[in-house]
Image (cartoon, chains in turn yellow, blue):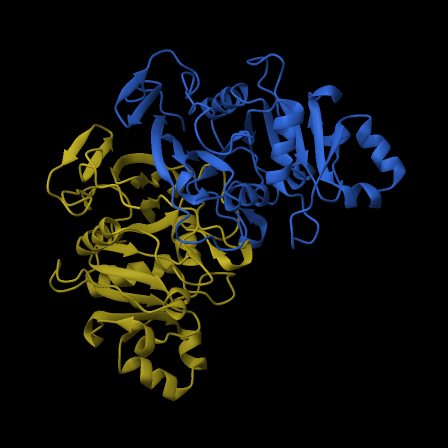
Amino acid sequence: MRNTGPDSPGITRLYPSFKVLEGKEAVYQDLEFPDPEEPGDRDLPFVYINMVSSIDGKVAVSGKSGAIGSDVDRSTMRELRSLSDAVMVGSGTLRAEKVSLTSEGRRRPEPLAIVVSSSLDVPLKENLKDAEKDRTVVITTERSLKNSKPEDLDEISSRARVLAAPEKKSSGGTVDLREALGLLGSGYGVRRLLAEGGPGLNYELISSGVARELFLTLSPQILAGEPERSLNIVSGRLLERDARARLISLHQADGELFLRYSLADSSG
Amino acid sequence: MRNTGPDSPGITRLYPSFKVLEGKEAVYQDLEFPDPEEPGDRDLPFVYINMVSSIDGKVAVSGKSGAIGSDVDRSTMRELRSLSDAVMVGSGTLRAEKVSLTSEGRRRPEPLAIVVSSSLDVPLKENLKDAEKDRTVVITTERSLKNSKPEDLDEISSRARVLAAPEKKSSGGTVDLREALGLLGSGYGVRRLLAEGGPGLNYELISSGVARELFLTLSPQILAGEPERSLNIVSGRLLERDARARLISLHQADGELFLRYSLADSSG
């Protein structure tokens, strides 16, 4: 049940200092990212991740992200999209459910919609809503292009631009995301990129050191779900102990928490 | 890397109101629980859960809870134990690694150490540290007592009191925790009980409506780990949508967050 009483003055920032966000419907409406000209990988876009999870760490159960997150979370998600040149998801996320990657008009043109797939099993027609061909990019590998059926490739090409990126070394044919991001930067003008999962894509972005920030909404609910059917925000080989994050800010709205972390420490 | 600069004034409460906890080494040193005489299940202990997880929702990877959580978290864990008459873990947690369930002298006598097992596969000798026979209770079922080997039962009985509780209906022989808690209340004087996992025990306590509060430490690190080898704070059949939690308070120390939730909504 939503608390709309006097204890619930909309969105408040709790950290690093207290502030009531008067009349705002989304967190981060005044967000500032680090200057992209600062030292770092100048040729790579600034990559940030946004996810919503239950208290018990679930982003989806049985493949569906379902009803996790409030209206403020959904509005905040669109706000974060409006700050990016491109919104990226893994193909597993697209196969699991219908998604729209737009900012709903908060940014014009809308950010590029980017789907990463090393298999080209990407149901654009069925599951990618509100997409335009010129604003949709499917990133895959040369090998996958060669191995795909012509009719499948025709179908994808009728709905998206297809970008072939190198394979990650000793990865069994997955896309080298660092290389792919470089191509998005140089060829598509992408300076900021928002990734929205799934856990495998997030893992690649974090473990390779290209993800700079993580935005996490912690929804005040417990989902449970069996481990083999539950997704967390990051899944992959155990990360080293130095994969620490630094809390940048923390907002609260009706018991829902909006966490912003810097992942700079894990990129070294 | 720990931030010990001027931005890190020890522990601060961020919600419901801002307060610096001067000179405290643990959160919740002034904690007050609801009066146990208030309406509710008067015969059942007040049950609260305490867990620590990484940002990506992992409490353990490959069976080990390892290095998740700071010194403040460990001190807070002991503080929460000192407020309980009994500290309960599931037998899977005991099998996974060595544990001590004491408050390290903050409460005298120490809380009862309680292990729940429907199989009596409980390596007390190997993995339960700092335990005294009179302050250790193994809760199991009559069926499990009948099926166990006499030498195994002798070994357990030499290290703990054994309490047989009814089986949960249509559960395949697991302990009925509501009944067990009633026995702990009436026979052992337990008015408050702290549960510390694993995810299966937490699930039983939450889904049956007996868990009243959840304390969660969110450690500023990303663990990753493969789903089949990772544990979250709660695992079991998907909970209903009304398993919502209410944020009671939120503290911060060096980027680590200490969340306290009421689970009252999920007990109805």
